[in-house]
Image (tube, rainbow, N blue to C red):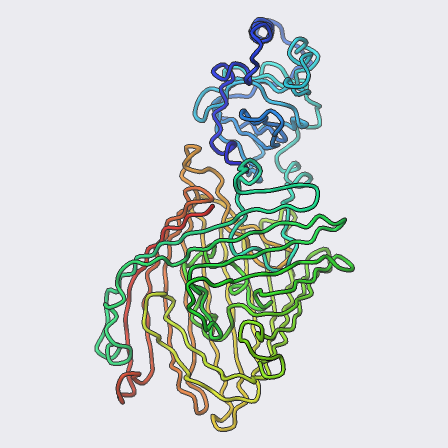
Length: 588
């Protein structure tokens, strides 16, 4: 939704009837339009017209879909959205799906143009015309023939919309569901595209040949370790040294399209540091480029993605960290699966998008300044399936399987912090020489409206005779609930869940979107001749999206660690610690 629409306070009296500078035109509008509405109200109260629609009773919600809003700053720009009137008061303008009940009144405005006063929390007074008054003066001079709907003091006084538009809420949701534009590639942008890019000229460029949009995000953290027993102190040292604040993420990027008949999508993103964790993230340069890839549409609705990108394995790895319920990924995902890699991925879907698939080949020789033959090569694939999807799509079951093979030509190391970025390393395998590795990942999710339960299991088998061929494994399971009722959309193109939508922001007089979550994660790093450490972590989280661009969240974790000391020769230690992290996230 465009930024001007989110902060909408259309007062066309103050605006001098949409900036029409001609004084005569304004007088005509005032003389002809307002008396017509008043006379219509009087006629409606005195004469019962059997063809007129029923006036909405008190405590009943009126939902008007497909209304065209003309930008007050630029009459050439317009946006189609839905609006809600509750108890005669203007409530909300949104481009998201609206949850309605069977008692609500629903109208289809047929892309008609709105004219009037809309201010959140105030009595609704407006009318909807079938033509743009900016381009067609007759729409104002002859409102009798051009008016579609008129509402005065929150009550419908004139309605010329088609009868079939006022259908039951249940039927409306089944037959008319808003379709969202999807990202072409298998993996969406790591930073959400700006919600106001249509009207923010300074962050976008568009011509007949290509388009571009600036994207960016800033995350500020404050870490506070609360407890640590003696065994944990012997294992990892004093954790209080990590207390304090940091810039967790300062990311920027550019995305857009090259406008062939089937547009190619490009994306370049970077950051001030290599914040994304993973065992093969080796750089701490001041500026690191995370993604630079080109997405090319190919045969049978498939896409070929070439460049540096995420490998297609694990929903938790594919989703952007800043939009997950928890602040950080689970310890097993950080330890066993990589951040990003150089390669090519071919992806597509089948069975009416109930099944997705992706497969790729990777080799990091470009970033590692080596050669393809001397650097490790990986083959990675993932397939997802929706065995159940309700008619309204508010409930679904998601299953997925991922596989990753590496010829392990480079030294391996599996290490991670305990789901806090400001921390000592808790699990660490040290350097490993191996002949090959094989990783598989299982996913399962159930979502029903604002409730989401998700879990993954990962195992990595290492072909290394001197370590007795160890197998490192772990799992995590999370329960997530949107207190304010929003639902995470499911991306059928990639088999992942989208960021939490904000139904009513604080700018619109609402509370934003509030999400609570819990997670239990386990990692088993002691196997064969390898003693990387066993750990289990229980986390609780609270995320408050005041707007789609502003998020406050809080995480608290209790951590158990079974591992020898990294700073002494002590073993058989059972370390216990706990702490919290707060985060402020801002998006362009």
